[in-house]
Amino acid sequence: RMMGISPGWGWLLLPVCQALVVPREVSGRVGETLYLHCWYPRGYEGYNKYWCRGDSRDSCHKVVETVGREAPQQHGRVSIKDSHIFCVVLLTVKNLSEVDAGSYWCGVEKMGRDLMELVTVRVVPG
Image 1 (cartoon, rainbow, N blue to C red):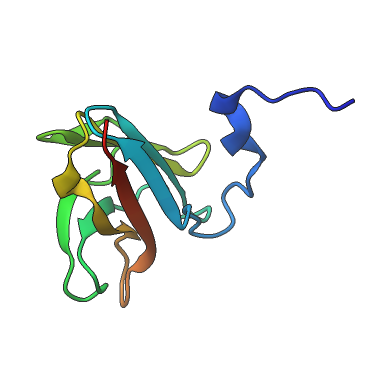
Image 2 (image 1 turned 180 degrees about the vertical axis):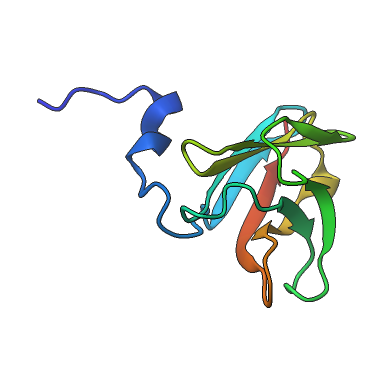
């Protein structure tokens, strides 16, 4: 039978460094930490990545951004960390609350139109 994959490493099986890929929806419980992986295409390693909140890509406001670096950046309970080797951005929301539910975008800043993909965050009572 198939060997089980430990939950933490399942993301390594996804297409790495090919396209901007995010889960359509993530959910977490009140008080817990929410983790979200956002992959981006090879070539955008040094570009600014961000996590943006709002219903449309044109009206959303940035919650946190990488400023093009791998070092984690934090804004309140939200942090973002970029891994250039795996072309993946890890977004973390600590102490999840009902107010965190809604529409978010993982974005890569570039000339012209940014690469952006929508993620819906759902929050379940603790």
